[in-house]
Length: 434
Image (cartoon, rainbow, N blue to C red; front, side, top):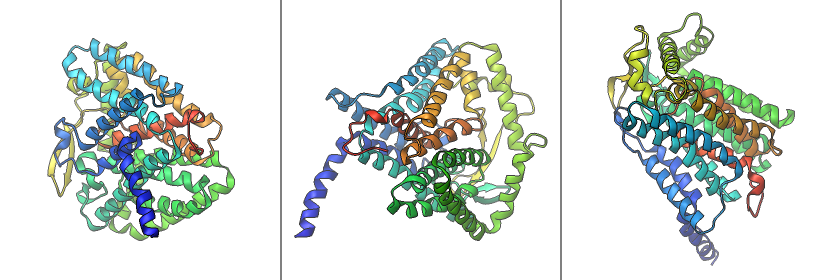
């Protein structure tokens, strides 16, 4: 009898899930686990996560048409960025080349974030979407640890020990980004969540530390360190002690699981301090790409060369010392050369492709949401800590990386959660959403 009651109660809720936009936001996150193929980075084609994001947009449009909740006033920050990107595309020398880049920019920084702010209207929506991010991060982290320990990951220094999850060697930073999102959410719950959830969140945060290190992504390490520091400052002294416990546990796990990769991790950490005086090849190439982006902006200061214009104009502006591509290798795709088609700095990418107008609008979007998450009342609660931590991570990570790959949509969903929280006082929830 009890089982029948549970089924009758639970199944109708499951049947109503597809009608909720937050369900499609969660599916967009989960879809990044679908491998894109070893050569997906060489071909511009929609991935499963892109299709799920379209379904999210359709679901939100239907909800709005039926009189559902409207986007909050903080979503107006995306308007200048959208207008600046559109103007840059229309002013580009090759408009047809710029249109796909414009569509991608609008998808990641405008459409999906605004849709998420509409989709996450109740506490259950927040738990569904945030929980999907944490769950995917744990799955990818487990696979990444297995790859690093068994030598089945991407090649680094001639050894297949780099953790990349299901993303493959073509997206070596994707696992680091995904794990970072999960770590920020887990740490927020561990610091300020309900007492019954804190222990599990601490364990999850500790478990996510080793795969983050095994990803060998130095820029992501710095971004996570800054995010964690901000979260600790916001939450106070006593909760911060729990984070220290998680950090120590993560360090112990890393020591036990490090194995053959331990020496390479130590070298990777040491190379952070020497990246200016004695940069390695990857850092040197990045500096050359930054120079190319700056030169593009100098010749096109107002609206840039247009979305996707950096790749087209790279060889015209890049120094001769720039490599033609980076060497990547994994079990799925074997050895291949991957062209360097972006400056690996989101701010310089926007500056070169959208000019000073585009960078100003983009800085207003990122900076405005960041400042709001750091100053809004309630920032010491789990949702507030996660929003502040993520926006700090985003602002720092963009100094070393730009958008690309399936995890860009997860980043977009997280941006939507942060934007939604900035106006959370207006949420029509039966229970507090943060």
